[in-house]
Length: 271
Length: 313
Image 1 (cartoon, rainbow over the protein chains, first blue to last red):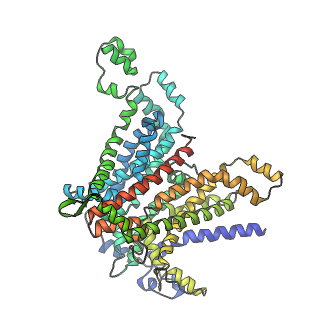
Image 2 (tube, helix red, strand yellow):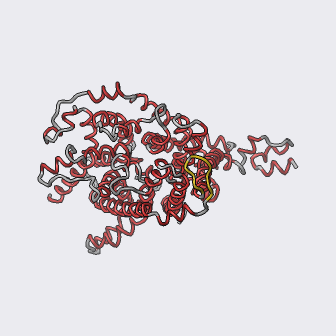
Image 3 (tube, helix red, strand yellow):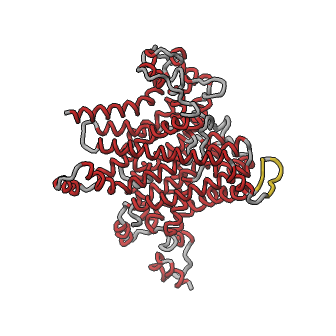
């Protein structure tokens, strides 16, 4: 009995600890400034909700435009990444191409410090006029997501039994047909999971977006970060913007919970 | 000759009667070259996006260049300066300090919670779903959020602490700021270690534990001699993956201290040198150093991942 009580008390404390800050975004988003900048304890939770933050965010700042930028870049870069990495992962998984060395080189790009890529690309992009363009950022997102996607898919491809392919080959399928008709349908769940992960990584990305965009191609994370300025901090619009930006990732986390651990461990742990 | 060619490209074996050269498409999808065909896009991408920046960085790390004029070749001077650069060495030390604190605390919390939740209980899926939420939220948004919550006067945390009589804490003081950054990071990532270890516990063979229980081993003994050794590959994976992410900590700094009050970490130093002071040569030297560090840890990580995937023993 006591054991059970302790178990639930600890569990609930952990849940409050995890959920509290996330709920805080949503509470703050609906607060008027006088409720945000208050030292009165009961105002933390009890306040008259208002939509002022949202209307300010939508009228005074290019929020939707920046959100659209983020969305466009995430979707386009993910599409490119998936095309490149599905083929590459299949090659690595089936033939161990490059004896593992090539796969290592691939995964190490995901682990590159962002700054190593940022310095050269900054100057290259400046010369080519790619700073503050959608194309520029898409290229960078392709760069840092491809290796991740390749490695994650590698794990999924390894689960496809080789006998199936051999059987299909005996039935007269060519390599391309085997891939299209046999392997591809089996790998679809893996492709779905990898796609969502790539979308989320580009959606959340800040470092490159912050360095490589100014106005035209500014992403929503950069917009939100600009509310924390040196002169004043606008917590209201910041929370309102964050509450909308974070929503898709929260939904993805909830619906993909079975695959999150697998994705974050590059497929090594099947959660 | 044509005979030889078609035989060489296995797939064309049946059509060897027709003595024609195989088309490019046939060569590309033949048994021999198909695996490389699949890799062409990736190799192109790696060539452009990986080797170009690397060589560029290495090149400029031997030069002095401040965006204007010509780069002056100065040999290893940048690296020599780096070795005596107090700010840089401090940032390095801090990065490792943060790394050790975060990894250790995350592992301890993770192990405790994993052991706690290693049973069937009502609502376990809800608990898991809720706990995993922070993992996919943009780190930048979280750092801004925590910056707000830990604000001295209006921050929720201080108000609650004040109300229960613990007194307000100045979270961003030079003494505490680094630990506050650690706390934010741990808050976001403890579910990761928890659920990796939980997955590990779930996959352990039951009969061994039955046997140890029958033999009358104490729970502590069982944990130390059975559970922990069997979990060690997973612990290894957590350590290398987290080390990998942690040495590149940037977003949590941007939303909070911006490298001030003694929280300047490795990546922030490089960023500041290259993009605030525009000392490209010196910044490149930092970046190259950071790169070698990363590759070293990455090699460790790769081994562990391949082991976990069952590719190598």
